[in-house]
Image (cartoon, rainbow, N blue to C red):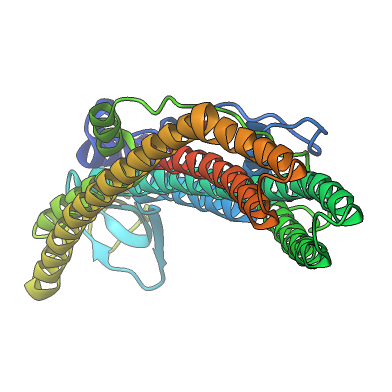
Length: 439
């Protein structure tokens, strides 16, 4: 049986040639599919002065949904070599009451068989699996971007609640100045106790607002810690306002989103996968092969006078019969429908991204303009108006109601400015997410 070794080698070489062709026709190497965005560094916990980007990186390392998506990519990458592999060869051994030949009686027979799919089938199956793994990698990128956006949105909610608490506390101190002025006027009979009662009501409203803002701040901290996969009561760095009035050119951002966003790239990879499946479905109309090399061991003696005991070796080539065409036509219809589905998904993603980019860009532009207006005009003027009204009230030139109105207006403008800053931060985060940027 020593001569079966070169025969077996011949079978495998023939199989490799028929099913894969030249090496450059193989499916894309799994290792070249996934290129993670940026190098991740380990963060044990947040530092006391951690900024927003550090929080985002912390969340991306610890979020369990991302770990699940990474495992899915690895699982799908492992399917690529399976898809392009040949079926295992078979060895068959026969013994017993065998046939009598002119060369002598057959003692036993052995055969090596290899199933050979029609040329191109394995290559297309591997290409489809490769593109599906690539789509999973793009979906992982999209998930990372979405979680980063959630962290940024929660951060700005945390900022607004914290800032509102600070502003309201500072304005409670300003209201204390009003109380001093009211008490001084009441002591000189220039004001009534009714003004003191109204002032007490305002202090009550302030305390109510502070309670609500502290609750909102605690809820925002819990939400942010949940996204960071930390205990809800874990301490967080104080939120910081990071002025950024640059939001880029709208046309360039729209083009970037439509071309490079992971949602679009995932849909494109799925489209390519369905195209490979369609090509494979069309190849299913052709028969597969079965190549076998057989050896028969012949006894040295036999009934025939010319028996020489010479062993026999021969090859057989079998073909499958693609008889049932309806399942094959169904596979073609399935792949064609998948191509239409992927085209529609890509178009839908691009339409959604166009709206998200333009909406976020307009909101960022509007918020930046409002911040600039309040910073340069509204807040200085309202602060000056409050100081002037307090001085005029002390001199008896304004009523207490006028002082309260200017104080309320100044407090409202400060809270509006914090809201504008939050809107700008959220709009920038939404724009970053819509254009496919992680940092």
